[in-house]
Image (cartoon, helix red, strand yellow):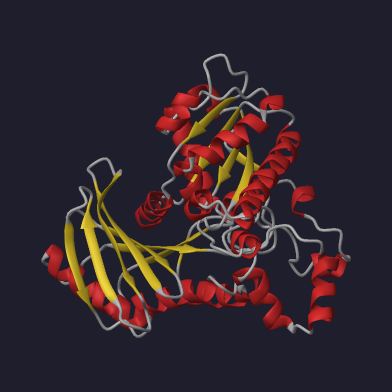
Length: 396
């Protein structure tokens, strides 16, 4: 294995990973991927190669991130046949705040700043930090790089980031940041090869999954996005509410006697598709169900996408292409069809057969605005950033 880069995406109950080999031209090739799942319970390490062949599937001591990473490190060292199993580690870090607008080598000062951002991403940031510390505990000599979901949106104009709140709060960093930036950055990098006629134009990308957002991109740069200070805003998601009248939250807190912690659980864990449907947060389950609640959840999801699409097209003064990505965007043809048919007014003409086949182009040749389904690859984006930082060539 040549100069391997390990990519980690840490969650509350899992540690997902990918290993990329470095080619002679410094490009990267995926070698294997897997996860340590069920952290804190009956943890299990699984990994497979790029052909889907299982490389390991066994129980491990995964009582926390430290033990999970130690188990992963030991297995990787044995797999590649040397103690130093990787040359660098890249982490997906959800929130970079206003400080981190590009990938950065991790040191004590960086960790300290990331800790201060935990209140802005309470469900993600602590686990990102736990993975960073776990690597330090097992392999302190290995360089680590933080890659931020917020960084791609740093190009947005100030007016797009501003809330209509008192200046004192704005000066403390209460503003829109946006998320899923690594996914949007990957799509922007893939468009010149997949859809060169759109790459330098006005594009809206819909990253649709359990977490969902949309982004307006003009000439490869983020102009506006649906998420804000936190990952709650915008589209309804698997269990997150999306856009909500702040007064509605205040009313519910008063009428239901909810404290801050209970309100946070309501908005993050019990709302969205799950809350509306009363059935599931999984779009596959909802599409297969004939329950009224399931239909209502799907209808709301599609409606909000259409409404945000119109808003984002307005921010860039038109539209050349709509790109679907993420788990739902890449795989749920009925959702893509409904969104595109609702957007005929924008000039999108759906090709039903191409959409059913998964694209990549899902609009007709005569469509004034083209539509695409393009798989994202956030891990490759993280690996690229990590490789550049380690090589001394960070992105501009």
